[in-house]
Image (cartoon, rainbow, N blue to C red; front, side, top):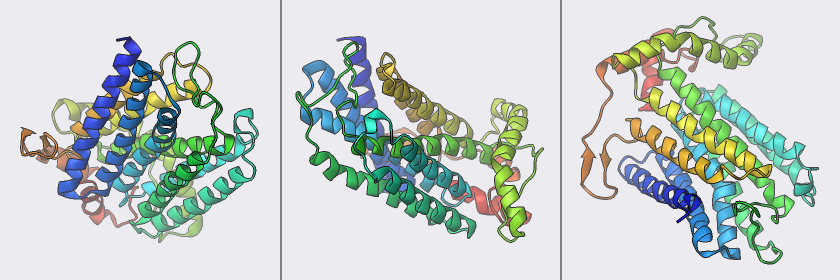
Length: 377
């Protein structure tokens, strides 16, 4: 078995086991974020499995169509949706709205590239839909309505459902699949432009949401030093709110960097919340495949299989570290426990609540920690 084949098989097995574990956790706790991540990892595993079968036994049209829908279109969007549900009771809705709008904008801006020929007016429709949904999510976040992830779910589910008949009616030129002539990695060269445009729409939104959500979640739960204060209180004057909304991304980055020394000390002394190392691993797991997939679109496919494997390893590690996602580790759908029920240490919980998301919720300072921290447990 070649190295690429081994990596692909290992990726498929890990992703499917991971998906089963997440479904098992969702069965017990009914967390919407667990269900969305479980579906995303299921698609990840199916896509990797299609690649493994293609490498070992040869490609065919059905296998290629399955790979494209589950891997190129659906996976990242569903993983990003899980992050939206996880952070649904925070101000992360603003960031997700930006991610969604950027996905629609990029789809519109690349409409004239040769690979998207024949898309017609669809890029404009994608942009309009993304803009409307992004505005609705931002408004819901402003009014502290924690149901805004349902709007995000509408976008992801809508694209998923729409892509099925679009793929079903596509007539692919013989032999019904396209591979890189050097590495044998599947490419989207024969997919029509109107269908290929769904890939950046879902992947940009999902990748940015995963990475931005990891940064935001790390910031929420790390011991913080706020050198650049800001407030997203909707009760403040409109001009002040818009100014604070504009500087919020910069303030979070500055405060995060300034808080790293204290976070390092907390990590060494066991006073760090599990969400901090977990979300860092998740961000790495999202970033690596995003880079290798981008290289694949530009014709560089050498790192494609390695990127997928490293991505699922870091994602799996991040979710396992998070006590919130896996309160106990067991063989899926059995009573066999590999690790007993876990809880955050008192020191970690107190450190998180003491420096919790003051900028993330528009509530009085006395109730910030109480209102924000339970939203992530």
